[in-house]
Image (cartoon, rainbow, N blue to C red; front, side):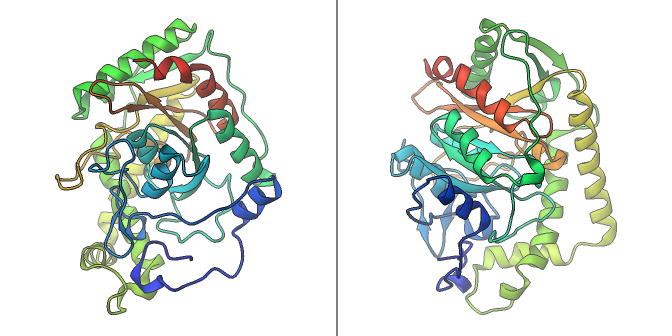
Length: 352
């Protein structure tokens, strides 16, 4: 099945493997199934009106996140060792954080996108989810394009310069998440990393995320145009979002792209002074399905997408049992190095 989580494509069957799937098979992976996702990938709860509501294995009454919520949930439940998701503004890393597993968002265009039901060609990236950082790195190495096989090396943790943006304080973040992030920073320091307070001048997390979302909605209106006017092809909520995107004026899109460029410039300039940027993955932990969806879910994750940079989300033990996530954003082509850093601290981050 090749549905994109959309009712209009519920009976569509893929004629061949996507390149990333074929490369994983060639590397020895056993491909079992497709998994649930948020409808059209435009959202982060995976409460899908056609495919059903995906449960978080840590607490079935809570969301696994999204848009790749089935992918995060299946790994957390132990159904599979690893899964694939797509990350537009955090859709691999948010479910990884909510489900207490690891997720890797590659450098833009490092991984081939054929077979992907695109939401936003400007930002979409296919990435792996697993419980083991070494496996994330191995999967990326198998999937990446030959032209993207260059690797940016990072220092070992001892001496690694970790930038902590002052803009974290601008986001309404759950106390337990901030406490988990502080503990993660202490773990980095214990391993010899040097924490550096940085100012990502030009990046306002909420404003940048909203600008990116406008671009996504406009591109999605084009990518999913074939289904937009099909009766019962999608939910009214998604159709309304796409109609909104189709109606955006050029002036609003120009201004939205300006926010994207400012965020991109801020992140890339910061990585000239530090080796990685550290932030919480999401401002909150997994929340109950029947509660209001927080607008700021992607305030932290969107930065890597807007900048085209790789990022890894790692689980951190937090109060009340539910984990939080910490993400490291690195320079272009540093996916394997980020996975190594994740492997070095994973055990310490998991301790409560």
